[in-house]
Length: 286
Image (tube, rainbow, N blue to C red; front, side):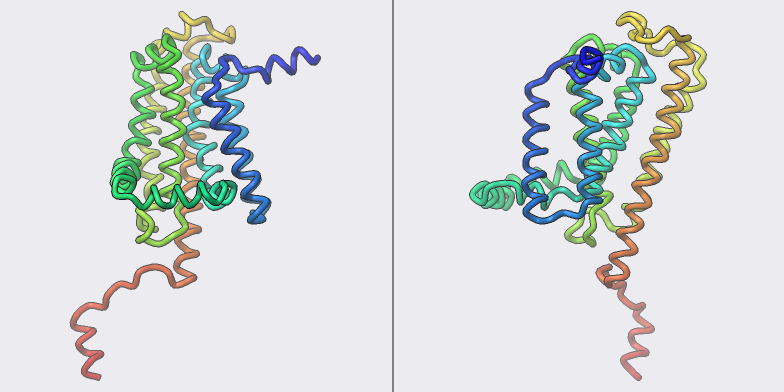
């Protein structure tokens, strides 16, 4: 029984880089959340998202993702949609900063205020760039030739997974921002509508894969399939996973953004629209 449990815990492909990043983020959050007394609901969201990232990338689950198309789609939905959404919904930035030593925090604040850092942030966190990257990365890695390259070269495979996590975190950080614009980079209304725009191409791509009558990804046959099931059945399941659960997750993100919009409105933090000129002139005369 112990051997069976270890089989699932031991990574299919061990990565020191991933483990170092994961342990560092977890240690910083654990330390910072104790100092700030973060609510249990936010802690639960953060640790659930982190657990999803670890299981999908650094356990035996990764074996199935490399040998079965629909398992690979589950992995990508978790890495790109659900895990980043949960982590960002926990608003972990303050806790992560609090977990750093004071000297490091001062240094990072100084670096963040430099001209180079502001330019990089303006480019990499530009709402149009982040949104397009969020959608493009899903579609690019769905191209059969790109999928084949990723499955044949471990470096490309890891770059694919890291790009999915990074784009998911960046996108949901913009959409779930609890601040008005400025200093937020998206207006509250656009944050609510954005998931509706980003889910549409994914739904179309999922429908194409679902109803395809040819094997679009024969690379999984070459690698050796994990399950003895019909190829088109596995492809259909993978397409449905892209189509339905991914859209539901993005809808949930839109609802969370709507909640923040209503909160800002209730607190009176939304920018006031100027009155039309004739009405303003009439009010002045009165």
